[in-house]
Length: 445
Ligand SMILES: *[C@@H]1O[C@H](CO)[C@@H](O)[C@H](O)[C@H]1NC(C)=O
Ligand SMILES: *[C@@H]1O[C@H](CO)[C@@H](O)[C@H](O)[C@H]1NC(C)=O
Ligand SMILES: *[C@@H]1O[C@H](CO)[C@@H](O)[C@H](O)[C@H]1NC(C)=O
Ligand SMILES: *[C@@H]1O[C@H](CO)[C@@H](O)[C@H](O)[C@H]1NC(C)=O
Ligand SMILES: *[C@@H]1O[C@H](CO)[C@@H](O)[C@H](O)[C@H]1NC(C)=O
Image (cartoon, rainbow, N blue to C red; front, top):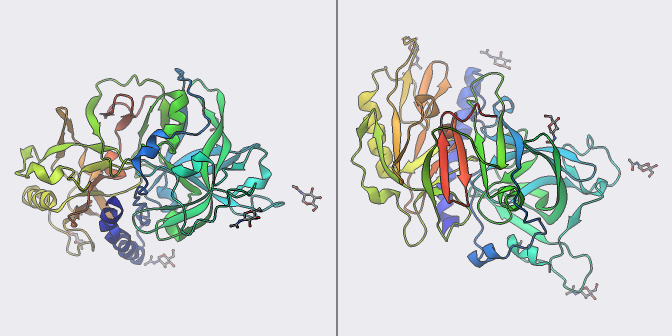
């Protein structure tokens, strides 16, 4: 089951916690990894729910697109990328983690009746909105979310809200009322569009390392962009077109540049490469891509292709996840990649390696460190070849470490995290079931 497989990534929050302390003790302003990132797991509900699309959204497909800025959370110590969401009438503004590895859109909520948004922190004040409405627990939309156990639902009562409890792979959970609300969006033509009845989680509780304390710095909730019907992209896709794109800009650039999450529309990006999106019925949330091979410094590594495949139990495979910072690869592949880097990197190793990383180099005496290039050969005859700064990160002053982690469990799966995606325009096209990527698309407005 994917639920347990995702738990194989559990070591990460611990690792990053240690890592943060290391950084703090040296006063290095390198805060972007402070967050034990969201390692999401799709909830195990029957896949037939996929077709039970009960939200009252327009099915009109226009040529317009929705456009929201995507900003790095580095300045608040987060390894996440955030997107704005304007919710309610009158609208209240929130910053949500943009997450292609989960489906639910949720915002921290307050039942506060007569208070300023200041006194409630940045929580959605449901009672201050004239358009807020929780789904009834007997409403068919309620079947799209996982419920707490026991789930108090009284069919005969007029007000028996749909309760949800949504879990991420590190055990973090959010719970509250699955609701609908009006959201205001900017379209690419510069007009505001209102989308009534967007389904979202009004979150009254959150717990776990990914969602609490400094680890969730700056975020008011999560914008799930996964493949199931409750995700933001699926809900908006019915109106604007079933695809979305984003470009995650390099977090080390200060001030962090803004890029956009685009939903719908057609991309005019030149020279885009494509790889088919693959599906795993046991984890319908995720955007899987097929990796065929890896090379380091132009040399193809002898990795058994079977390490990349999804098995009959739904384990394995490679997902593209904006909500995970580092990249995770199957242990056998990782070992060969690490060995290849160790052979080819001509820069001296750091005297003090950063805990949790297997390869750290000291670039003190190297003005323009040259590091070997990592390339992924993908199904569909395309090659994803990110620049070294996407997988060598500065963990201390003048120390760069290989930011790839092994997936040790047999039940694990590989994750192409958000660092690895930096500087590429990625287009998730659900209609054509393909992922497009281009290094030239980020500047396209
Ligand atoms: C580290 O930062 C803290 C607080 O910002 C400061 O009090 C301390 O003096 C700094 N230590 C060093 C070695 O710079
Ligand atoms: C808050 O409540 C007081 C009385 O209870 C009322 O006079 C005031 O208008 C309310 N403020 C808002 C913003 O609803
Ligand atoms: C459900 O609600 C009705 C009406 O409020 C009440 O009479 C009934 O006892 C409730 N049933 C349960 C199981 O709580
Ligand atoms: C739309 O864009 C304008 C200008 O960039 C911005 O001020 C406004 O907050 C945006 N509105 C929404 C709903 O995103
Ligand atoms: C890196 O190298 C410099 C000079 O060669 C040295 O002073 C420094 O301590 C080294 N740092 C680490 C972490 O290895």
